Image (spheres, rainbow over the protein chains, first blue to last red):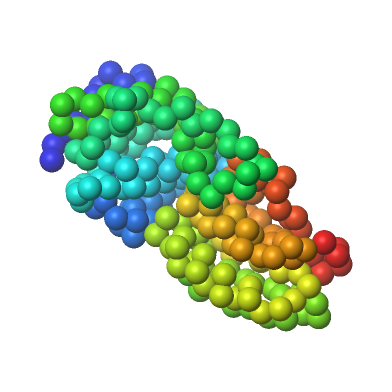
Length: 153
Length: 111
């Protein structure tokens, strides 16, 4: 599968310094991919707080793709991550099922009194990221987002 | 997901030995925890000080374990690391659990 980063998303992605991973659609591959991604210098130079937020967002989006887009058949997920000043730009593509209704879930805050065991994912993604966009280009789900980050001095 | 448990007086302490509770391990974690909490005790404290990363599946699993306890026993948590604390705080699930900063604090505070 080849999906080139769209230079128009958020501000732009410059290919040099962009981390690119292709992950299999199973939770163990996602865990290993996250561990490799967050061990890169690109992410190690962020403050722990920024790295935590970024890891939560990326993990939730990847888990969602595995759980929903690839619920009927397996596949791969491509992910590109790059940093520009105080933002981390993340783009992901998969050829799983499109989002129901062609749009991202609203991700409402759950009622804690009901003791929910799920449904936290999109709420966390939306709380910790911005410029969230999604489209299905006829073959691929393409999702992009930005995360505000701080660097270590 | 490796877990170990220990009795300290009336408290059953269950300690996570791995550093992640995520989608890859949430189901096994939940099953194992549900088995371990069958041991009778007045209180159950889950020591999360080794857990550096918790995703929404992991959070759901922790909630599920709490729901499996029969009142008045509740799942108390201890030693939340920064990322784990952030997930609990953002989802406001920190209001649902009794959370102790450290294990010694958990031992001092009865419920």
